[in-house]
Image: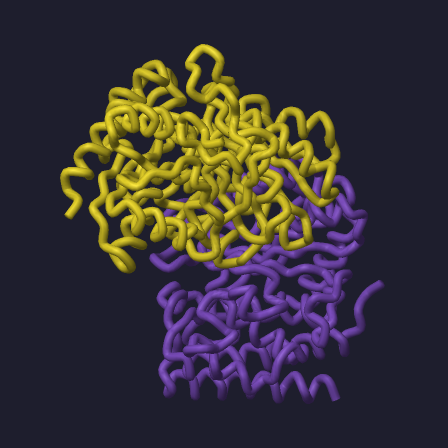
Length: 334
Length: 285
């Protein structure tokens, strides 16, 4: 039996996604915290290192479960990365955590040289990404991090859509080899997937299948994309929603497939449109299948203080904005 | 136990050979740094031919001592020492900075096993050394980590982040060696951004400090031995060196920090170094 909202049955998605009262809401950082403890149980080489944000990055549970494998290094994000390179050279699997603005933000050259050029197995956990950090304001809202990470050779960049997926991504990242950036947020965000939903690095997920427009999304805005698609279906526009959680290496085949099926694309990310996930989609399609694209994200501005939902709306990443972008791109179809 | 004079002279001969290699490599490469590699030849001879436990035919030997070259730009001295120790053929030194060479302009671990890490951007070596040393402690391993730094890279904040870390965790298995030659690419360190008092800075970061003449082989070897008996904290050896050491017209001149000799200048330099080699050989025999 097909799902009334057009969701893919095989993915075992959450039951109450479209019920605004009942939909579960958990911060993606909680998924990281749970995943890291589990990763620590599975592999004794997993080490946690934090730059004075142990509680808010949710590394606290790991620190309590494995005190001998946890290091508090103070407000020193460059050290966080460079030192972890040394640990990784000796076979440890360091997870280094801070706010995305500071790590990778402040530590870009260390990520580039000490981790990626050096080809070592370090995992960067960037918490509090996006404008949804809210009241802390622009200084703490990382909206450029995907761009500055994805341009570095050898790195893997993963942006999961909700808390359960962040947990699975944490475990997958721990088990994979190579420098990796895992991005997640602070606020409670809707739960879309379940424990039974599959997750594999580099394999994008079609959450909903439609033939008019492909909405390609990563991170917590996946929820907005699904709601927009559901509402658009009532207006006769049938959208595919592709959860494109791995920005690097991107699932090129999935991107080309959905673009080929729909002939029009809207990309959605809680990040600047300058160089982020949407830009990678555009690079792929420009080379392989030129397709009209609309880009949802922060349009080359800095954030500011405010409530998370208020900021998502102000910066044009709300459900109505996605719907408008879909209509615009439909009009551009040849 | 005091090292016999003959052993000191033998190490001085090693340093002299390394200096000759450096000159030949730099002329062949046509670019690179002269002053730092030359002034650290004594330290590298001591490390590779006396102090460190290592196996040139097995660069990944798990129990080897680790040497991180933080100031990657002086890599010719490391490459020459490695070649002379048997890591790769001496003839390969002439590929320095050339396309496809394992001997990149700044060291890359993935291209040259045995270089331990990738380094060049200044200030990052001690941090990586801290990771190595902490891992050794976690695993109960006895090997030591040596980190060679320039003096000017102490202007980089990251280096002091690492100094904090090693002090907090009392990483007594780490030894930082500073090439205190007082010059950097743009001039005198104390004019560009004063580093002094360096000893007091390290002491306040909870380090043990040794200060030596870094071009005196016996002092170098003794200091590297002495650090093994410091168990309370990490140790830094401030090695006072003469930039361009061994080549008369380069010594003490910051303009030789970032350029190679011409082939004529190299001839003069090699003649001087070979004369010293002859004297050392005579003393040895």
